[in-house]
Image: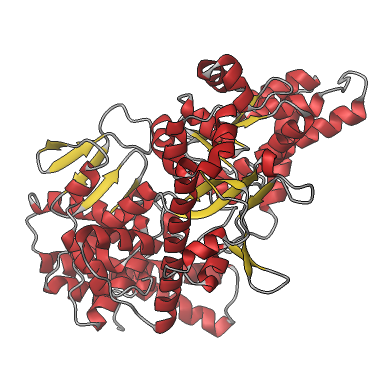
Length: 614
């Protein structure tokens, strides 16, 4: 239920944070009665659908079906987990957080030490590039590549001289030890003993996380300084603060534009990304020497609905687009493929034709479905080569079968499925009904495979699916007075059907065990699942509206609720008995007794007295 963070930390930070001020610092808000409203940044919002409740310190968007407290807002906006959101808000409020356990403290301190060392190194590299006379060849190289002085400053581009221990020597007068520099990937052990700089003689592109903190470097050897035996590119190794599969170059600078345009453009090189931003395409990011993977896609899903892959026009580029399409299908994110003219990369196209030419190419990029269809049918005579045509058709249907059912409204692939079937039928000259039946068979085969175990189901449930009884139960639970405690103990979790209601009841019982009243605010602090918080806020609004019109007091409502739950429990038991009777699970004498009890229970519920003898 809780991450193990001291509850006092959460409570102090939440109380010190004005949610209206926090949200209003990112989104323009307008007051409407007791609420503040603004355009939701997580969907294409034309009328204000994001609401901030200052009294309950809660925000929500009914269109996206998301919401939460200050921690949830920071998590979603900054793309961080709860612990990091807590740290950021505590720092914003000037609160020193408590620490639990030496291991967690040591892990936190190690991460902080690495980030400080990386930030220091980035400053050293950047300063040497722009100030040192020996760095003139690097400045000339960047000028030849078309990178401006302003772009060098914005991206923090730097360079390292060819000295074996230049960075190491500078670190001797700082707190950054050799152990920390090695953990950052800045130095390497020498075969002769001692250490040497990993990035010597290279142009350096700092890789930063969404909070603009340097977590790694990408280094390109300067052609004038290159030696035959060294690789052209060297990247930082994996570390406690960096994973090439979970970071994207320039995302810290691109995320606001990506969020606004709901589209991210992915290129393959640091220089390509820098020049795209320089030419006004500020929604461009780059992968870090690896293929685009599921971690990158999940990262981008925090900010956009679609991704455009900007790939070279060669065979390798087409193959890469085909490989990642399946990942996008699994992650429910739309993908387009923009193919560059043969022999050109983004940087070359920008210098030749300018930013508008590249933007037009991105705007006209076909959906990846169309791209894949062209790829699988290329060179095939669909009328004569029946074997290859059938294989290509099966490949397209297999991909369609992987589209998750019930996808979000913003996901366009599911909406285009009917069009795709029609086009496949036309292209392959096959009856559309036959294709639909084959697709149905494929989906049935996939559904019959053992499903992977998932965690809590609460985040997949909507508050609108709560039964009337469960809504009434939760409304009484969050009143924050003596009735709350009575409700929490009057009902067992298994008597509730909705997973969210069950988890909220368990959270309330945890609070009672600690001597605390399970009020709305206490439950908001206790739970961390954003959907559970959304359920709480939805129920709280209903409770406020009902308080103005209902005549029954809390005790009367509680008594009726317990009675209704008892009735539901008895009816459920009766249904089980009837099912057992129909399946003939009872022995003859047991069947008579079960029937007798069933009749008695039904008479009792209907208020009918049992017949008397004589």
